[in-house]
Length: 382
Image (cartoon, rainbow, N blue to C red; front, side, top):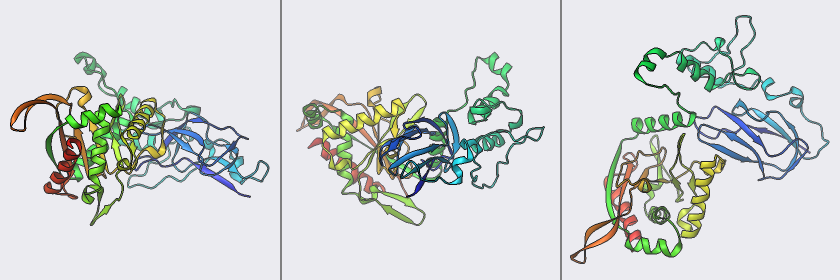
């Protein structure tokens, strides 16, 4: 017999806390390994978390709509319904649990009110308050039990700004969402740390359009399929930069950039080179629907070899995208539009798309990128 402590998982390099938004089991319920157990909100999306073991849910320590640091024990699962539980089970709600907070160069000290009583606030909120110069002792939290969260700190910082001046100029100050801030941090880090270059190529989509219509799929699906197949012959484009070495992957996992009102997220189609167009379409549509409804699974993120970003549906002819670290490259797709091109020595009207590949120059050179893009074009035009 054994008891498993369920923890709030760390679902990204920048994640230091999460909000549990739903339990799919209650105390006393049986849960099987791989069965949906709870949902957690991160700076990227709402993610569904599966049970890592089978057993009986004996205690739920983190209520719904409550925020806690990563690695906090949030539930206990035992093999049977009557075996003894560890002392943690009697600790009450997780707000009573004191998890260790990771040290930093500027540690966020627990806030203490003027009467000596500790202010209930998240580690991320205390750190953000220090960054913005907000007195956390003066805030009233909107979380459970008056707990102060990131939103409370940022709202206080916003209200402290020069309101009369903003009103006079017709401006409105809106704090960044967690997702928008995460996108900004990732893209800033990409531009700062990774020297990037881009190359473009126009591709005749006549053959690809015929395949697309026959399979009942989108242009995105045929481009994802072509990029995945081309990646197999280009190990550098399947690599990531790691200090003084390149780490090569043997998989062609393709990220799909999905635009949301709150920001941009990139769920991943695994082993896209091994799947037919119909399967790729079904998986892509399921990922996009889950992303927009906020119900992506935790394993839908991370590990992509290359990202495809298609703005053609918005009428964009061509654009240059920023590499999504730690990937080596990103493929920007414009709209497929009729253009006059030379075909067999004569002018012809054909559906053409502009593909722009941005590459981390630490990983690959122009010739590597050109050969890869040529293979993508050949796959689409064959």
